Amino acid sequence: LPQARLLADVIKQTREMLASARCEKWNTVAEMETVRRETLRHCFASPMLERGNELVAEALAVILHLNEELVGELAAARGQTLEASLSNKKSLAAVSVYNNVCEDT
Image 1 (cartoon, rainbow, N blue to C red):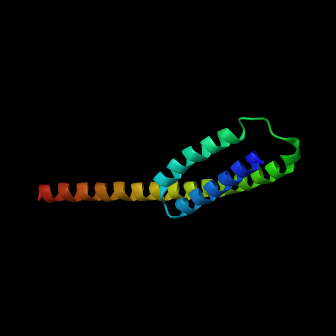
Image 2: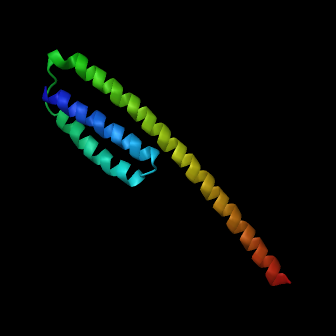
Image 3: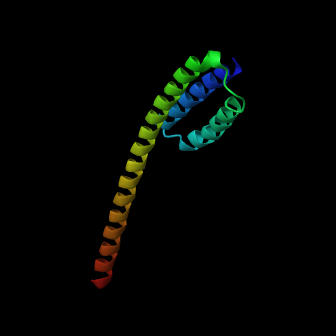
């Protein structure tokens, strides 16, 4: 089934995206998402064949599970970025206060 082959490609692409996310290669993840969406578009451009419904359902379940892991990686990275940003703001504020104190003396 050509759709099964395309879904296998999507699973492979999603796994590669997850590996890239774990290495914090977010630009790669974004580029791969564009390719993955196009693969999915081709996969579902024509009607599904009844004989492959179970295979398609299993493939979609795998893709959804991998997506959940990918979203988890993204959420963790977002949290780390927020923490780093807050830390930088605190450091800048401390430097500003220090500079004001030094200017006053």
